[in-house]
Image (cartoon, rainbow, N blue to C red):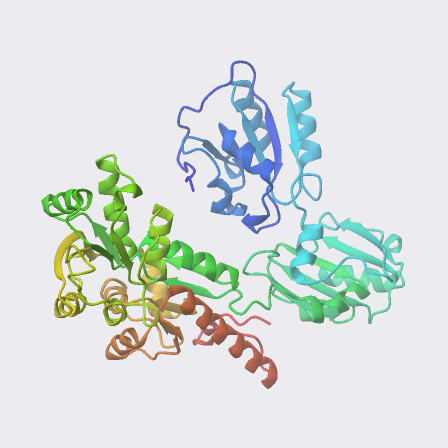
Amino acid sequence: MKAAKTGGPAAPRRTAGPGTVAIVGMGPGDPGLLTLRAAAELERADTVVVSRAHCPAEILAHCRPDAEILDTADGEPVKLAARAAKAGRRVVRLFRGDPGLACNWAAEGGALAKAGVPFEVVPGVSSVTAVPGYAGIPLTDAANREVRVVDASEGGVDWERFAAPDTTLVVLGAENTVAEVAKGLVAAGRPDSTPVAMTSLGTTTEQETVVSTLSRLAADTKGMEAPALIIVGDVVNHRDRLSWFETKPLFGWRVLVPRTKEQAASLSDQLRGYGAVPDEVPTISVEPPRTPQQMERAVKGLVTGRYEWVVFTSTNAVKAIREKFTDYGLDARAFAGLKVAAVGEQTAAALVEFGVHPDLTPSGEQSGEGLAQEWPPYDEDLDPINRVLLPRADIATDVLIARLTELGWECEDVTAYRTVRAAPPPAPIREAIKGGGFDAVLFTSSSTVKNLIGIAGKPHNVTVIAVIGPQTAKTAEEYGLRVDVMAETPSVSALAEALAEYGARRRAAQIEAGDPLRKPSQMRRGARRRK
């Protein structure tokens, strides 16, 4: 995705006439709840006015790189928006949630109208419905068919108007007046045993929900963070059966993914699906070979029929060949007549994306050794050519070449790319690694173990260590790490799944023992304990 400019004004594009302001709701917290219309407005915006402290980076990633981002902390939002619009810019004024609920749209829209600035409204997903949905609480059911919403942020609420026992009540802006809200409702006639839930940081991976009653609410929710929302009524009783978000196996776990950026993407997406917060830290940097002549000759040989097989031992090798093809104006059709092998499912997927379907992948261990075990012997009657091209890293092992040579094949080993240790991550990441700020770390190879420890230090002993296979486990143990999780099959997808299964078992054990639900990082000394 495109990154938004975070510095000062850049020279935003201007419309032919006076600009407009789009008043846009960005949803309650989860960037995935941004509407298609809101994303389109951000992509077209010359200027965006937003409270940066309350806006996820993924939201602003929809903006053009040259978009001007104005923080409401630096001035009155309506003045910032009006000034930009009068300069001919297309402006987006971003509000959290939906602009029409517990926001300042009424005042800002009125000021824009008074100033003669045209505006339009793009509704957003409201916290009123989204947060209860993420908490597993439907606002209506067969017995409760009315919902009332009250904004208590300014105080002075007449609770008598909201005392009907068969009505679901959603209270906004009451984070600092929980006791007053509960007392007011009880005084108005709601039983003090009425079920109540309070959810803070709703729809984010920091979401926390406490279920209580009106008599216990203030005591049970002490210390919860803002923004928070209170749900009052019998519908709260559905949460035991319908909670789906906070019960994800890795909910809220901060997971370190030490890979190259390109390799980390699919793994991070899978981890997010399990509720985790992946943090991608490159441990190696992939660079072109020092002398490109070898690769140039290899690509020429591919086209002229020099090889019978091409073996790809990594997604980086696929990328290197693909880039060379682009340089020469070639595409996947150049592989016509060639047999292609891939070391595993990730490499095979990269080939398929390129338009090449591999003829051979290992059915067992996804490694050079696994591929070598299934490689066919050379048969001069069936194979007109006995040469095999292996475009790979400068530090690749020779096991596969030795095995192919034994089987009668002539291997041409070409350096397609170099791997070098990446630069150390920022200080906060290093401190989190060594101090137990991460709940888990995934090691996808022995080199990621060595490189991560080399550039950032050894993970804290509360951190769950998950490895892709036996060789990686051996390396981790040699470096003094306790291996908690190992994938059943050596693939990144299986590794993420194994960690999720571990998280689910851990959560179930805590519930069975009657212990508070705590992430691994909360087990270290001095960690903040949540209810």
